[in-house]
Image 1: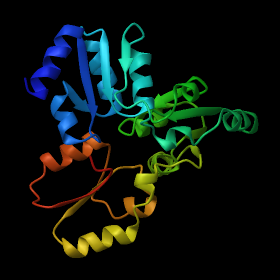
Image 2 (image 1 turned 90 degrees about the vertical axis):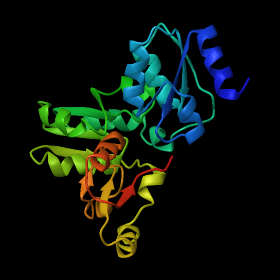
Image 3 (image 1 turned 90 degrees about the horizontal axis):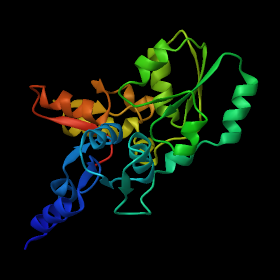
Length: 234
């Protein structure tokens, strides 16, 4: 029996569903029942009859799936897979901000630990962060943990005081404006689509800014032949 058939057999025997993030290897995605971003996958798991969730992703993704599926078992194929940014904010810092600012809402990006989420007022994704922050009644917004996504939200919601945390995604943060310009020199007809976890200087060169699923939809629905994609490769 080949590997894929064996995986299918085990899923049926164990009543399990396999979720794979866009960022995992292609062969892992091939074995998955659903592929997407962390929030989408957590929701899909809740819609299935499976009582076991195998989540091919990092720790905070598994935690998010557990939060939305409290009565299901969540298994991580790589127990050591983690997101550095998820740990780049502290409870002490949140408490300090609450003491310093009146009328403060702590807005937590889903790429964070379950513990940090419990100290926040609302949890957002890269695709709905602007919409949710815009609708909050609070004037002061402490956006955690990603300073780059928070900075992007600030450019879109200008009537609020967006206070940035010092956290960032190392993979996105390393990209520079020069990287984009060099790629555009090599591919002058290409459109640039980037994730808002990139630095503002990179976003400034983009034709499209959006979540991973948003970038995929933008490219699929576009007639252009070449694209420069500013996000983490799978």
